[in-house]
Structures are given as C-alpha cells and as structure tokens.
Figure 1 (cartoon, rainbow, N blue to C red):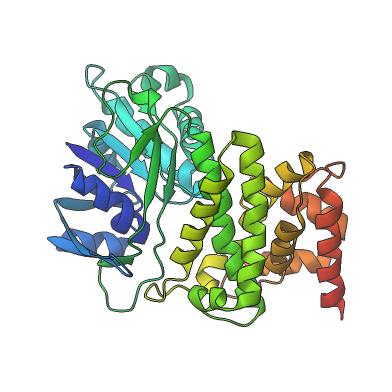
Figure 2: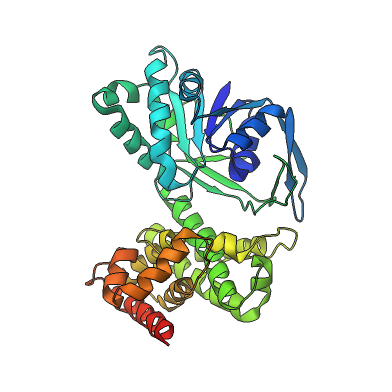
Length: 384
C-alpha cells in the first residue's frame, strides 16, 4: 500500500505520516522545500518523540520524498498509483496541491480502486474545499477524473510545536492525538489508519475540535502575548489567563450543546483534557507560533467568530469570545505577515469597515456591535 502526503513539515511527519506508516503504507512525502525534501530522501528513518506523560518514541521508516515544485511529473505518477492521498499544508495552500492530484488522476487506471483523499487541515470541510479546487483545476475533465477518487472530510488534533534547532527530520509532538474521519465515502474499504475513528456524522467532531482545541489554543496565545508571556504552558499557569480561556471555552461548549446535542458533562471533561494538554511543560510551544496568522483566526468561520456568531444567533453569551478577539487585535509580531497587515488595517480602516472586512460579519448580525466596539477600543488605544 502507498500513501502520498502533501506537506512534509512537522505535522506531516510527526502526525499524519506516522499514522500512515503504522497503518502499513509506504509514505511518499511531497513538498516544495528543497532542503527538507533532500533531508528526507537522505534518511532511512526518523523518530517521533512524544513529550509529556505517557509519551514514547516511534521510529518511522519506509518513506521517501518528492519535490512537487521541481518534479511535478513524478508527483503525478506517485498519485496515480497511490491508495491514499493526504494533506497537511494549510487551507490556503490546497489550491496549489489540486493540480498535482488532477495530474495523478489523469494517469490513474480507471480500473484501479478509487483514490482515497483526505485533507487533514485545521478547517471545517477542508476535503470539500480540496475537492472544489480539483474540480476547478480539472476543468471539463472533472467528472471523469472525480470518478477515480473518493473524498472524506476529517477532524485532526495534535500539538506539534516549533522544533529545536539541530533536530534534523525528527519531530517532537504531544502524546495525545485525535483523527476523526467520515466513514460513508469509503463504504466497506476504509483506509487503514491506527488510532483513527470513523464516524457517520463528522460535523460534531469537527466543530468540537475547532471550537475547543483551536479556540482554546489561540485564546491562550493572544492573552499570553498581551501579558508578555512567551510560552503557552506558562500562559495557562497564570490564573487570570486560565480563567479567560476557560470562559471562552464554556461559551463554545454551550454552542456545541445547542447545535449538536452534545452532552455538557462530556464537553466539560473534553475541555479539561484540552487545557491539560496546553499545560504540558515538556511541550515547548510559544505564543508567537500559536498566534500567527491572526487575520485567518478572526475570520468568519474560524475559531472565534464562528462559534461566537452561532452563540449570538441563539441568544447565548459571547463576552468571553469577544474578549479573545480583542486580545487577537493586539497581536503584533513583525515577523508574521498577517499580524503586520492586521495592525495596518486597524490604523487605516474605520471600526465598522474593519469588522466587515476581517470577520465577514454582516452589520445586521447580532454579534456585529460587540466585535465592532472591541475594534474601536483597540483603535482608540493605538491612536493614543
């Protein structure tokens, strides 16, 4: 069995690639980073270190790498004969991956079993998004090529912090992981992924993960950055920050109860587990890494505005989530392109215009006034 994985970075190697390897797949990593591809190709194995309670080391072998920038034809040939294709590239990069999959499907035998495609991204419906990009890239051949593949959305969770210098292609991760996958697209032949669970309705799992893990992680980063704290674990050691993050997650849990009928007690335990993961002192993770790309994180269907909008529509509290958005507006990192753009927009747009542009909220939406007011307060502080 063979899997082609797009995105050979830390998540690709330390999470998706590891589980594919443990499922018995030969893993072909595809990436555009020349040095990384060369380093992977030179190695016979790499180690995934699980840092924290219950952690162990896993040795990964049986892999190779292809440069999709310099060798697109080779990538297409690998896709054509693969059983599984996965991605961990970021939602905005899926459109650049799609042409390689289209080229592979064009070479794939119509008699072969359907290619099993899963986008493992921090976004709702990422595989649907990838499928749309494939349709656009395939043009008039889309129907023929799509018949050679099946597409399943997934919800993934594993903290993979910035890696220490000199670690090569080894990866340090947290022991905990979650990979939920839509079952129906695969029928009786699901991919072999140890530890993954296949579910009939993925929506509750995606939103529970996004609105708890991602909301909590980003909220910790932004409140921590505001307080001048460097590490995520240290931020949650601050009682005031821990209370702010917990309050935001209580609001997202209330949404999940209303939207999906999830059990409040189960959600309380899930929140506690997530916060303990963030407190792991052996997992060296920084507020700068977690807080990067703030514009994406305050966008309409992301981890703050998404659940807060749902809460407002149901008449539920949103104060803690809006407070997290306010903290995100203060995130100022000259090394992060989106942070720079965020601070520029705050200085050049009026509060209402900024809110529409960055959050996607309609001025008539019940959440709009609270977010607009948070923006106005930040702008007043910047104006001095």
